[in-house]
Image 1 (cartoon, rainbow, N blue to C red):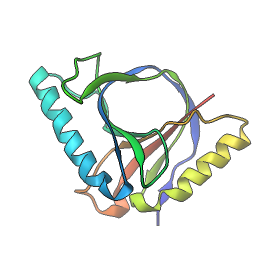
Image 2: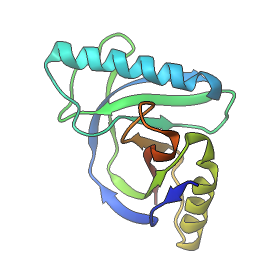
Image 3: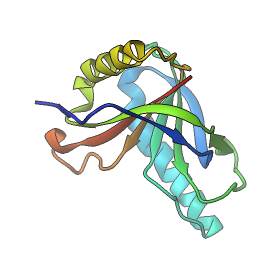
Image 4: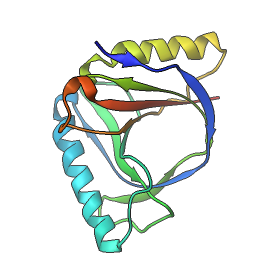
Length: 153
């Protein structure tokens, strides 16, 4: 059964990133994410740089048949992009977050709990949702660890 930690709020500083923004349906995401992470990792290796935190996927919409996603790595400082790998940043601001453990397909109820918490605390989501992945397909589904981050105002 999926497990969710306490929902909390904090203020995050701006975070430089390297990312690839694309559109896809939900079924194609695992392949696109894997390919994107490999390409960004190769670019980081060429630059002799490292990621500064765990990889993420930003969801700029929630249309499962036409997702607008940003596949990326946080980095220590602004770095040059290459081709469709873009230099960017996750903006500074308040976020609501929680840690989720379990299969990705069962996250919907966690999103609902977080939306309820945001509404109860008179906050407004700003649109983009981030999933930060602490492990991946090498782990049993029941042990997948994902931080869900929702910027708010």
